[in-house]
Length: 217
Ligand SMILES: [Ca+2]
Image (tube, rainbow, N blue to C red; front, side):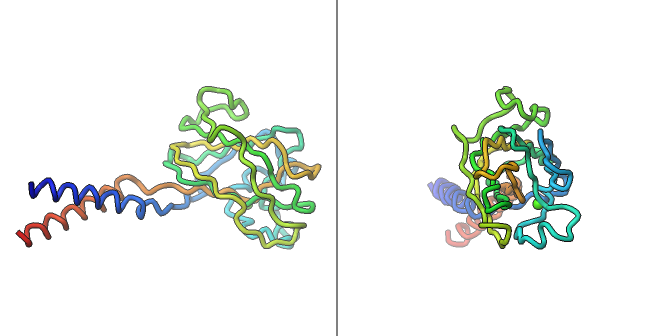
C-alpha cells in the first residue's frame, strides 16, 4: 500500500516535471544545411535562412554594406521550396520564423506547406514521396512582416511541431504580392530536451520521495 502511494506520487512528479523540462532548446545552426530549387541571387542564397542572421532585419544591416542579405529570396515561380537538414534526428517542439520584408513587406512568404522527414534522403520538391509527412492538413499562412524595409522585425510565426525529424521543408505557394519571390530572413528550430535529461530528473525526484517516505514512516 505504502509503495503504491509512493509510486503514484512519483508518477505524478514525472508528469509535473515533464512540461517544465520541455522548455525548448534552440538547435545550434552550425550543422544545418539546406537545399532549394531557387535562389534568386547568390547574395540571397537559401543558407542565409538558417545562418543565425537577420533576426532584426533592419534595412541598413540587411542590405547595405553586408556581403549577404542574410535572408533567402526564392524564385517567383511557385511553388518554390527550401529544405532544411538539421544534421541529425531531433525531437522537435517548434519552428520559429522571421519572415522576410522587401518591397512594402509584401515579399514575405504567405501560404506555406510544411513537410518533415526523419530520412535525410527524402527528395526535396517531391513532397508526395512516402518519405515525407505533411505537418497539419493544409498550408500554413505565415504572417507578413514589416512595412517597407525598415524594421526592426520580431518573430513572425511560431509553428508547433511535435515531430521527430531530420529534414524540415517549406513548400512556398505564394508571397504577399511582391513580384520577386518569397523572402525569409531566418528559421530557428526548437527541440525538446534529450529523454535522458527528463529521466534523470524523474529518478532524482523518485529518490527524494522515497527518502522522505522512509523518514516519515
Ligand atoms: Ca538569416
